[in-house]
Image (cartoon, rainbow, N blue to C red; front, side, top):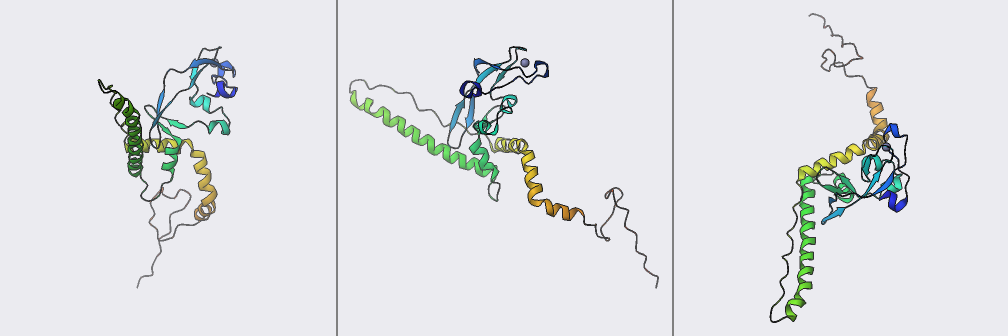
Length: 218
Ligand SMILES: [Zn+2]
C-alpha cells in the first residue's frame, strides 16, 4: 500500500493527464492467492484513482510498481500471474539453475514443505480442540473437519513464472553476460572462420567465399 503507508507520490500514466497525482480509492476488492515455500497467503492492495480521467489502478499494477524507487519496490513480495501468484522466495529458488535443480525438483521440494507445514497446523488444531472434548461428558462439541492440503500448481506453471522473472530482469541479465564474458565474446568475434569450413551463400555476410585451392595436376 504505497500511498496509505508511505504517502508515496504516484501519478497517472496516461499522457493526456500530465502526471496527475493519484488519490486513494479504498481497498481493491480482489485478493490474490500467493504461493509461498511452505504454504499459501493472501495478498490485498489499495485502489488508486486519477480524478482527472477517472482511471483506477490497483497498487500492484506494473504502472504503479514501476514508479517506486528500488527500496520500496523490493518490499513488494510476489510475482503476479493471471491465476496464482508466486512469492519472491520461491522465484529466487528457481534462479539457482544447476544440475538436478529443475522445476520438477522444485515442485517436489515445495510439496514436501507444504505437506510438513500442513501436518503441523492440523496437529495444532486438533490439540486446541482436545480440551473441549475432554471437559464435556454429556454431549461433546463437534468441530469442523480440518481443511485439506491445497493443491500445488504444476511444474509447467513454475517454469512459466521463471520465464517471466527472467524477462523482467532481461537488462540485468544482458549486462551480466557482457560484463563477465565480454572479453571472450570480443576475442571470439574477431576470429576469421577457418578456410576449410563449409561455406554457403549468405552464411557469412561480411566475408567473401573462401577461394578454392587449385591442386597442380600430376
Ligand atoms: Zn488520469
